Length: 233
Image 1 (cartoon, one colour):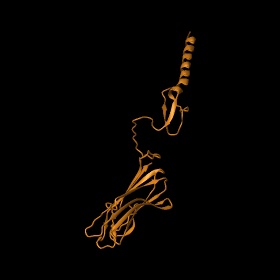
Image 2 (cartoon, rainbow, N blue to C red; image 1 turned 180 degrees about the vertical axis):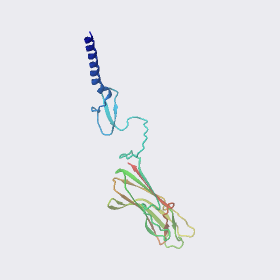
Image 3 (cartoon, helix red, strand yellow; image 1 turned 120 degrees about the vertical axis):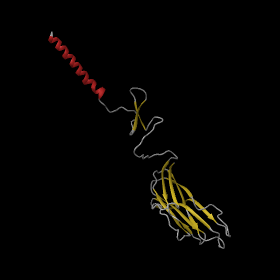
Image 4 (tube, rainbow, N blue to C red; image 1 turned 90 degrees about the vertical axis):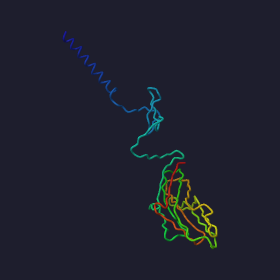
């Protein structure tokens, strides 16, 4: 009788061990998902509501998602109108390469120059410049009425020298005692360039006058600045 009882207990133990051996991997182990509809890299795995279908879709697929990011974002695509990059340079920033004509003015020449590297090959680059200047002399008795002009230009794209005007301002003084400016002033000036590459683009602010009067330009951080904004197209 004891032998029969022992065999029964042994059989029960064996059944339990067999159950654990077969069921434990299914209930506790993890296996890679190998059968996915529309597989793609860097995708979010979702379900269409059935038990036997898993679908991979790029990006988040839920509304009202909040992301807490401790690192930095480095996108490669942008929506139309989104800001891709912004650069602000004070007058004395070495990257701006700004002239200092505060002691001896100039009658023509380049005031400021900056080389920008686009982040996108399909963008619009908006350049804004403003600065303090002082016109020497007066307009009374001049053979020509005083006219001063500023130009915002694209002068080089990569290794290709070019000469593209993207903005123009003019300051005009009437010939006569007490006359003042009778046109737009030279600054601020703003223009835009439609970009199609990621090579360096050189922007310049040029100045010229119609007679011998000189203009003093100042480059301290509080006297001049340039802002470059790249937006997606």
